[in-house]
Length: 311
Image (cartoon, rainbow, N blue to C red; front, side, top):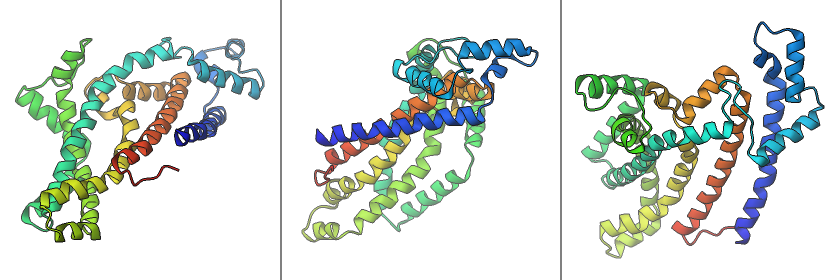
């Protein structure tokens, strides 16, 4: 409990630094929001009126206080592009992102860990070499190629899935529209994850405790599942934790190519439109989420390996 409280307390100055950095960057390099909102044909009087309405004519410390107030109240105002409240915009886009990204994450983990352990157990064999060659080839192909070929083969030629689309029904999305992007994303991510996890397992297999376990006559299955897998879970958890924020961000390419109204596509549109309230809110939320996931990952270290001391 003391460790948890200390980590939560340490997140406060970190978050304050992120807030200050976002504020300074948008003030220094973001351009004048009043001119962006007013458009090209606006008069100086109209621009001045918008600047006054947004509070941009106030001192910087007043604007910073207002920015912090928005963060604490979760009230980011409205999107400049659509007029929709930012909080409502996020709440409406997040389910679509999670519908696609959560299955991708789960399938990545469920498939890549046993596959990597299996090929590591037969290191140097024909199977191991064949898998390494296949993963190297898979890594060499751009994700765009997977998307184009996948849509042509599975949607146009075979007709197994729709090319793109989305609906208001979660089950329709999960069973009809999400399978193709999930299938392609898992096919792409399986190669690097398998290679990475295989290296973790091979590193553990070379340790003295594994040789001792084998010398004691333990079955190879027990050595792999009870000793090697357990000790390799620390770096694997680190890798999964590093990828978790991406689940909520979504994949820009997936959402754009498959017309999925998720957060990734919305943030991309916000950047193109210079929609500052959306970009700022997304940046802060992502920072908080990343810190929370890092804390959760550290706690999981202890659950996986009781020898880990949380200090």
